[in-house]
Amino acid sequence: MPLETFKSSKSLTMGVELELQLVNSYDLDLSSSANDLLDLLRRKPFPGVVTPEMTQSMIEIATDVQTEHGPLLAQLRDIRDTLVSAGDRLNIEIAGGGTHPFQRWFEQRIFSKPRFQELSGLYGYLAKQFTVFGQHVHIGCASPDEALFLLHSLNRYVPHFIALSASSPFSQGVDTLFDSARLNSVFAFPLSGRAPFVLSWEEFANVYFTKMESTGVVKSMKDFYWDIRPKPEYGTIELRVCDTPLTVERAAGLACYLQALCRHLLERGEQAPEEDDYLVYTYNRFQACRFGLDGMMVNPKTREQISIREDILATLRHLGPHADALNSHAALDEIERTAARDGNHASFLRKQFQASGSVQSVVRASVEALRSGPLT
Image (cartoon, rainbow, N blue to C red; front, side, top):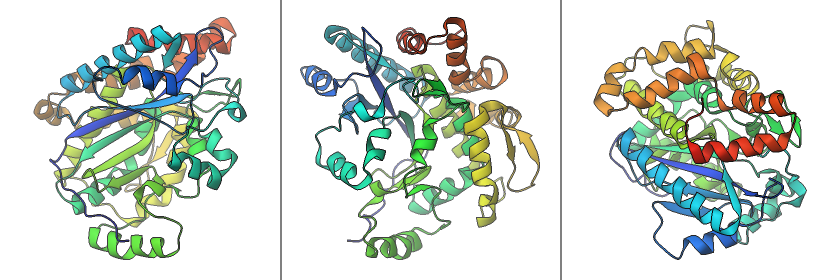
């Protein structure tokens, strides 16, 4: 069947989705408690949307459509408080972070939902190894061609979001030496990576998608695990490279940084995206995953190398007028502090491990970070 019509939405609106860990309070391992938690949450109104995810030890929350940082952060805090309160009743801890530091993937249980069971049958053990946790940010687009323009114009900024959000240095009980080990799990899926370079929705829907559907490989946009993908049913693009941060404050900051960047790009002040931009895409992506803010990236237009940290700080200097228009100065201040002083949450988690020598203490720090807010 043809790809559904792109439902245009108000440009630069945004929504946030967070995949969160469910953790046993007694040993801090993952807890297969999604059913119990979701049953409890259904008993009264929830300040957003909460749904199951691939395995029983994770859930996903989503905000309403938002336009500004203040209301977005307020809703994320309400959602956080509701989840923590419900978890306390069930003796379940809630945590952010892109990976659980020591869970064993083969012990995870697939959530009993037809799509998840289908994916488990298709991908085998990869489905359980997909017990990783990401933040997805949606940005509203006035037209489908605007969506594809933003999707490809953002390609050079993808390392920023990987490095800023990175919170998955540990996996299977060891330090992976990656700031974002989570994305290595995502990259194992055959339809991951980058979207094809198409700037016309007519060509994307009627040529590319039609060909892909004819192969039997895909049935809908959900089958693509691209770093950024269009979501025609929402009228958005969806950035998918971020680890789930440890705090909702960081999550809101990342969303509003993306919103401001998109406003900047829509002014058409930068060179238009082109296929050759992707010559350095995989290299830049790897540098951000491996080294975080200390990684090096190649500017796809100038071919110059710069540290990801410095490129973020240079970019922020262009976004002041957009922060004025979007009321997002507090969010961009959060991003500047992360890049210039505080570091990402991967560095915070490594400090916890160095102080204690225990991966359990890393989980405890993650649990407390979500409860208490900004880290110092």
